[in-house]
Structure formats: structure tokens, C-alpha cells
Length: 314
Image 1 (tube, helix red, strand yellow):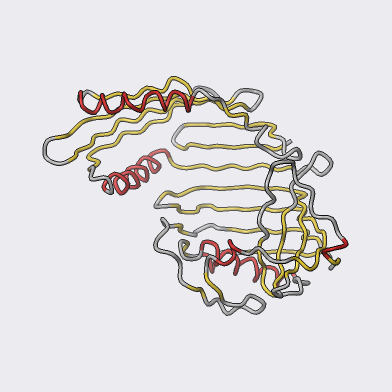
Image 2 (cartoon, helix red, strand yellow):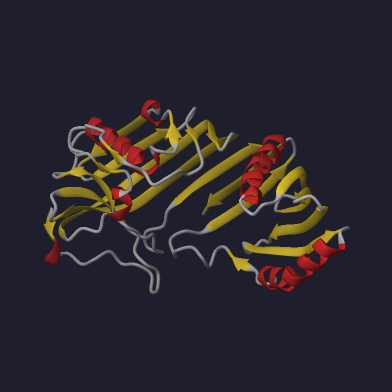
């Protein structure tokens, strides 16, 4: 690897923090695809292993070409992701080149870099047919090409990947598709809301959620919830909103309505209505939030028995 003092740091957009390096075990960097596959699996286990079941059986394939990763394919089909629990305990994975350490250590690796080596991930594919997230089956397909990075070696004897932000001179391309069953989404939302509201002493006794397509980039959301607190307070709460993305990739949330037939609950909703309106009055320029080398060519939201969100990069 090139001495860190002799190689300039990766060029990041002004005001945008550089992404954290991703640790991949002990130095030197992997030279064989099988070694890289084992290190990717170990890092995934460190990141989400305490919340993901079946990750150890997920197929991972990688092909190296010198410092470049010619291709990496990760198949998360059948993996089950649970809600976060108590802080993770140390994980002893015992994999060669990847010493045991606390499960959160990968997220805290900020090494004193002593060596760099530039590389490119030419093709990345992530599949999940299906991944189960909090009891909700999710179908995912994502592909990206020409992702630049640096192999970095730390003074602690570990090696990892430092992502390099795409630029106008080095753009990335790709596409992604995420689909969920609409009825399953309602069931999962009901379960999550039940837990969250119980922490506030509120019982969720009913929930009806519907998403209606208004075109390839627009939808209307309607929520009708029945809640109960203590012996004397029970009410229904209704919320509606419309969401759209225009041809310039600007996200807008409009027509937000909150209401309840219970006067007390309606009054409480009235105290937050102004904050909700202020928050939703500001449109979000999706393209502006992305680096120069990432251009959204199209975004779609299709709603039928499934809710399907897809995006394509130029």
C-alpha cells in the first residue's frame, strides 16, 4: 500500500463528512475472493449479527482483480431481522484474519491510517427474495457499478475499505427495487405501534392503514387508529397525507390532516398541527442531497397488492 503521507485523502464534497471506513480484518488486504467473502460475512455479523438470524447461511461471492473488486454479490434471502435489543455483547466469530471483538466495534473503527491503495468495486448486487424485517417480508434487488474506494491499513494492524464519494468525473450507475405486501405492512405497523404506544401507557385497539396510488410518483396515505388510555379515555384518530415526487426529483408532502371525534384528543392534536404543517411545507430536493456523481434518473411508487418503490441512477 502507498504510504499515507504520500497519498492525498479522498476528495469529498465540501461540507459533506467522509464515510467511516469499513473494517475487514487483519492486514494485509485479502488477495483471494474466498478470503474477502469470509471477511465480508464477519463484518456483516459484527454490524447486524445480533439482530439478524440466518446471516451465517447467506450466500456471498466476491471476485478480486488486483486491488479492484470485480464483483460482489450478497444474497440475504431468508434472513430475519429483529428489532434492536440490549447492547450487543462481544462476538467471537473465530474467522481467520478477523479477530473477535465487540459487535459494535466495526462501527467505531477510526484508525490512524498508515497506508492507502485505491480500488474500484466494479459491480455490486444485493438480493433478498425475501428478507424478513420485524415480521414483514421484503423483496429487494439492488445493483451498483463503479464504486470507488481505498484499501486502508491502520496502525492497529487492521485493514478495511474507505468509500470514496462519487463525483461528476467518477459517477456511479445502478438501480434498486424494494417491494412489500400491503396487508403485511399494516400488520407489522400495528405490532410496532402497539409496542411504542404501550411505553406511553396507551393501548392500540385498532389500526387501519391504506396507501392508494395516484400515479407513478404519487400516493395518498390514510391512517385510522383506535386508542385507549386508562379507564376513561378512548378515541379514534385519523390522519391523511399525500406524497409526490416531481420530474425534478423533489419530494413533497401535502394535505396533511389530523383529527379525532374525541374533543380532548382533538385539542391535543391541535397543539402539534402547526409543527406538522411547518415540517411538511418544506419540500425535499432528493437530487440535491446526493453527491455530484449520483444522479437520480427516475423514481417510482407503485401500489396494488404490493407497495413497490424503485429508483434508477443515470
